[in-house]
Image 1 (tube, one colour):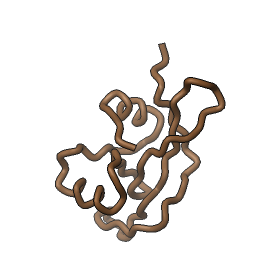
Image 2 (cartoon, rainbow, N blue to C red):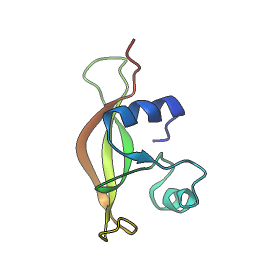
Image 3 (cartoon, rainbow, N blue to C red):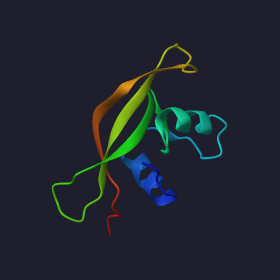
Length: 96
């Protein structure tokens, strides 16, 4: 799922990670491997937000899905694996 800047900001308030900017040199390679997403790096590795069905109508939420684990202690190399839901749910709605 590709997020706009407001959605990225809301996600980062609910999920401790760093969003890769669209102009980061590695984003085209990640997009060719995993599809068009906003990519997040955290202590567990590479993640994306996938839309999921909310229990309340007209509510937009997503689940953080891990795509690759860190494969070294310096957090510089990733090891891809089958997408793995993390259980972290993010609300993309702004709260007034």
